[in-house]
Each structure stands twice: as structure tokens, then as C-alpha cells.
Image 1 (cartoon, rainbow, N blue to C red):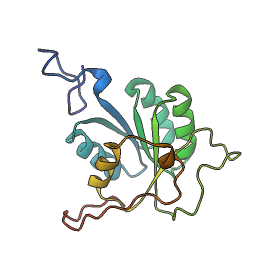
Image 2 (cartoon, one colour):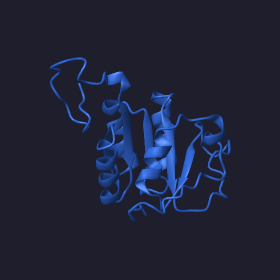
Image 3 (cartoon, rainbow, N blue to C red):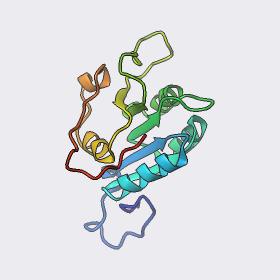
Image 4 (cartoon, rainbow, N blue to C red):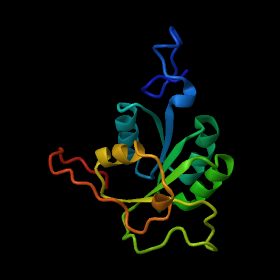
Length: 165
């Protein structure tokens, strides 16, 4: 079984542990290790089983063992882009939510057919507060989210200043 920190634990009691199918497994892909690792730590502390990778190629390798419910990926990565990695992961895990993090304006339609996008992506703009990501993950995906041009903005005026850039 996987514990809340994303590691393996011995099952002392089924009532004390979440079933593996109930754990939200998140694969984070960012070529900046500090961002990927920090987000993984924050998500692990908030009830997710998150792991970090630093390239699209690493994400493909990790996905087969992590079996993610959600992939959060930077769009622009060296080598394989986040979109390419997301498409390939979605082929193996069609119910997996693919969330793109982009520092570019939402005016670029990342869901246009004919550009190599077989999967509908969700888009969040950077910089973004980690709590906004947690809140977003705690809401079910809807068809409107998967084709949105204007990602939601959150008011975090009462939160500490910790944003991912």
C-alpha cells in the first residue's frame, strides 16, 4: 500500500489506510527540479501521492509504475514537450487528467485538433499559488475545464506569498 506521503507502508489495518484505488496519484513534470520537488512535497502533505520527474521522457517511464490519476506538467520542456508527454501518457491511461502549467497567456489554444493533441488538456497559468493547485485538484474535471481558454484565477490575498513560477 502507498502511505499519504507517497511511499510504501505495511498495512496494519485496512481501516487506517486508504485503499490504493482511493489515493489520488499525481505525476509532476517540470524541468526545474525545485519546482517539481516542492509541488510534490506540498501535494504529499495534503493527501495526494505525488512524485516528481524532470522531463517528458522521465514522465513516460514513471507513469508505468506510478499509474497517475493526474499529470501536472510544464508545457515547455527540453526534448519532449509536456503536451507530447501528456498525449502519450493519456494513451495508456485514458482517464488521467492532464493539467498543463503555462507561463504564456491563455490565448494560445492548446486543444486544437490537428496539432498532435489527441487528448483534452486542462490549463493553469503560472505563477500559481500551490493552494490554487490543491483546490483545483479537489474539484472534479468538467468538459468546460478541459477546453477552457481562460483558466480560473483564485484570490489568495490572505495566504503567504508562495507561488510557483
